[in-house]
Image (cartoon, rainbow, N blue to C red; front, side, top):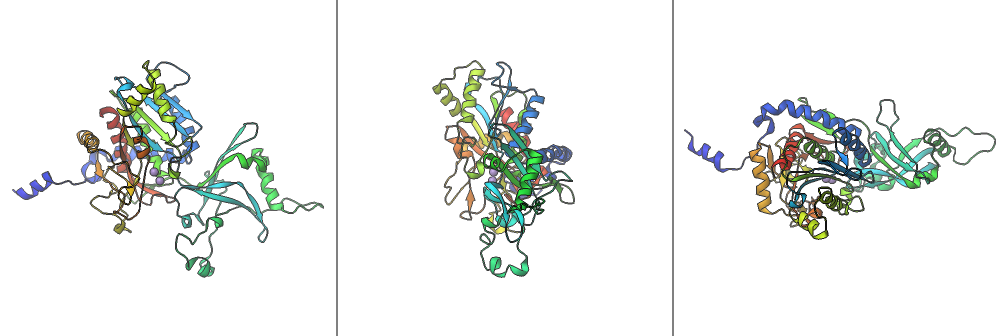
Amino acid sequence: MSNAKELSEKLGYQRKNFWESNPEEHDVAFTFAEGYKNFLNSAKTERETIDYYQQVLEKKGFINIDRENSGNKVYRLARHKNAAIALIGKKPVSEGVNLIVAHIDAPRVDLKQNPLYEDKTTQLGMMRTHYYGGIKKFQWVSTPLSLHGTFVKNNGEKIHLSIGEKEDDPVFVMPDLLPHLARKEQYTKKIGEAINAGKMNIVFNSIPFPQDNDKVKEAVKLNALAILNEKYDILEENFLSAELEIVPAGKARDAGIDKSMVLGYGQDDRVCAYTSAQAIFDAKNNERTAVVYLADKEEIGSEGNTGARSVFIIDFIADLLEFNKEKADSKTLRKTLLKSQILSADVNAAINPNYPSVHEKENAVHLGFGVSVTKFTGSGGKSGSNDANAEFNAKIVNIFNSEKVNWQIGALGKVDEGGGGTIAKFMAEHGAEVIDCGPGLLGMHALYELSSKADIYSSYRAYKAFFEKA
Ligand code: MN
Ligand code: MN
């Protein structure tokens, strides 16, 4: 008997490949990913995500906390960019909630508030843009793009747009420079500077409005306005009160010859939105009240009244106390938050086989090895990080072990290689225990991010175990 081998397995930490260690879960992980891909395809922006959940929540029997006063499954939506979903547990809410927070905004390119112009030299109708979040600008050129968003007319009427997703829809593009003429303009520059934000305008149209004797100056721009007015009944002024987002056109797809992965836009962090929502829908016999919070604006620092630094979720928990016929004064709310446990559900960077040097492989996330538990994020000496307490870390790991969740340790990159943060530190300000927990991605923030069906399913299992056992 090989004593050393046995001892090494017993004493050492070894992350496990889900496909090797959980063969009985292959099929269920694949099936789970089908629902996930459908979600990604119908929810490409934060507004579309909230619309999606509005429908799903009603179907699942959740009630609007502002409309009814009894039940144990409640929700609140706010500003078409936030959702809070709760499953009231057996214990009082004031014993603390188990909250999972995920963000539903993703890096993208927005239209400027006055976007439309006609390029004089080429007589092309163009749209000016302003990017949102951490994008690599060179990825966005010469690729098919779709336009999603909402116009709000001055009388409050809303007009929703989604152009470029259906088979016969037109798409848009920011044409890149041909290599033949890129020598000075691009090749002499650093990669981050080669595409200037001012050169990310999209080509919108090219046919001029039919001219009569009174020639107008910008007939191509006029034709764009005429088409928009005919189709959507809008004026140029309505762009000023619009939120229009440009995202990669097309659907999420299976990736790899074995179809074990998913390639799609906006998986940071809609993978955690979907898996945490599925977890609260399926959670049973939870002692503590379970809450899912879908936040906006994480990619620009959790700012604004729809970001995680806003009062929305705290206000919701206060209302949960009241809904559950408990005291909801400020001290009770504070104590409730202090006793709460939070998973900051966000993606992590899995080791990219093309760039292994930026990771430290023993501490980095491996694609297909399950959900990652990340004690701290940040950069340059843990700066800007919520560093989870070891006691809470151990509690979570213990639950995952006893529920046979495939999990792994996950740190973001080598020390001083770069870094980044999540919502964790903002949630921790309220005094709750917080830890980061989510799947790894390859090519995070790219137009198409790669995830593993193993990790998607493991995240769902982890979140459900957290709601039921933590
Ligand atoms: Mn994220
Ligand atoms: Mn991100």
